[in-house]
Length: 178
Image 1: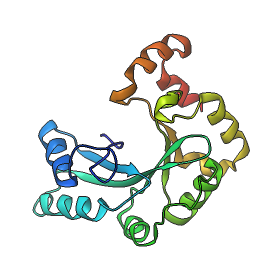
Image 2: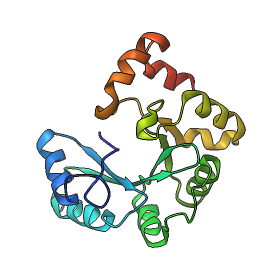
Image 3: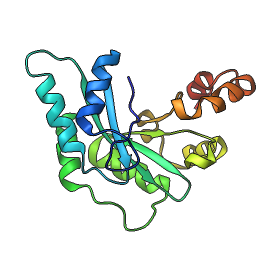
Image 4: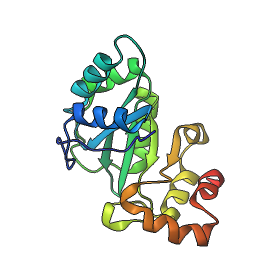
């Protein structure tokens, strides 16, 4: 599974079709496309996955978007296909940077989204600090917590996880504690 990838619609190097081809070649079963603040390549991404899966389910495409908020980026993933179609039809880039809590509540309520905090603590990648994540979770209603996660691994920031693993006994354990 890799739910955090970008295409040529934002800062990625590959077209949606190439992303799926690479994922299949690498043996991934689930692949997400999450461009920054745009979803223009999601229809192509889903259509190509449908073509690949025509006779046999090979890969599950997860439409997503990485949205800039007042604290940093949030990854909004829409795992349910019916909600995804509605999301693609109705998505509009926010006119201003929303607060994370506004975004979380809106997208979970509207699309049953799974919200992921990507690259936590990595400021240069607009990651939200672990302290801010804890503060945010303490302020939003408990019913939203089941739809929230934290990115445990991202190839661009593996140095953070090795360093933090020593401090927190592993980011996996920290994720469980949240």
